Image (cartoon, rainbow, N blue to C red; front, side, top):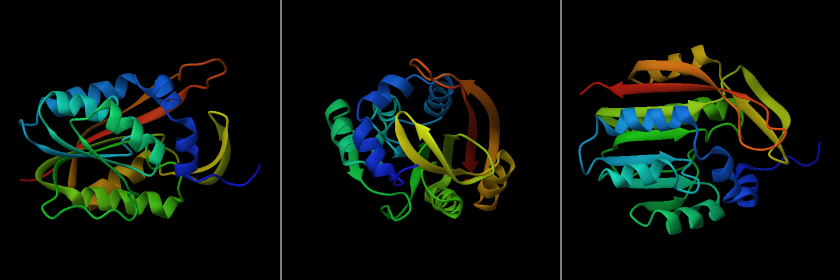
Length: 209
């Protein structure tokens, strides 16, 4: 393997190709349907790892939410600003981002934690849980597994990935004060020749009012 690439480098290079491959993950669409059915107009929502803005920020803006997206990739932020002008997008890292006081009515985290070290994954879950306001919702998706520092080739890039097991994700959210209302696993085959099926974990959680 060559030099390990950061998440920012990988996603700067992928740009809109990421949306072409992962823009219509059925489980993510279902999670957004579940979330938007529970949010009032004007709800403050944070989209962590907002990518091109689609489908998450675009869906949330469409139903009247006040959306902030953060992403480590400058290229992704530029694409999202062009695609979803009704939301705000910032180049920021979940590991260091400081939100405005008061938290969010919902926090979304669809696959942004994989290209980091395992302790950082755990800490990021804690941080996002703390940003979920009382009565607010947290929805997430990831590729689960007790994995630390695994070198792989993904979408033509050499990356080092980490994750937590399903059980550790659930325990971490509970320790962060969130009630996991639902979780399930689903298999997704990305678009493209030679694409390998991925196991996805989806969690829907809420902080008590």
